[in-house]
Length: 111
Image (cartoon, rainbow, N blue to C red; front, side, top):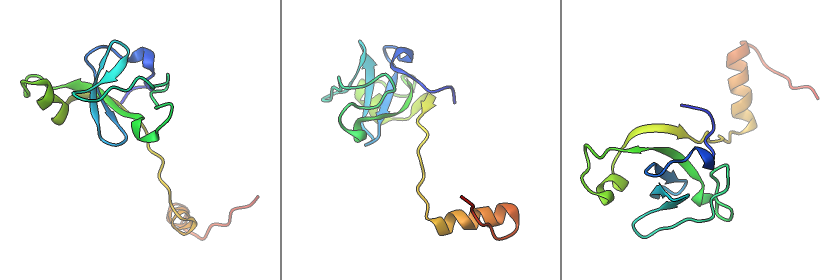
């Protein structure tokens, strides 16, 4: 994977996937799909109002494998250029377990 993508890195024809799984093509500065259009994308590729509209994956479609735009939108990426790193929530118990495994002993966190 490459560096963090920004709006200025996007090129016409790139395939975008949003947090809710919607796929659209980047055309003329915005993501556009068969029946979707998302003009509210900020420079960091997040949606200005709805987190489910954040772009989480960018790449190119596989037009060698898929003949139509609809097939490409529903198919696999030919090449993934960037994926948003997702945060993972864990409990403090899970965190202590990972730290104990890493250090080989009980861990105490000091302030």
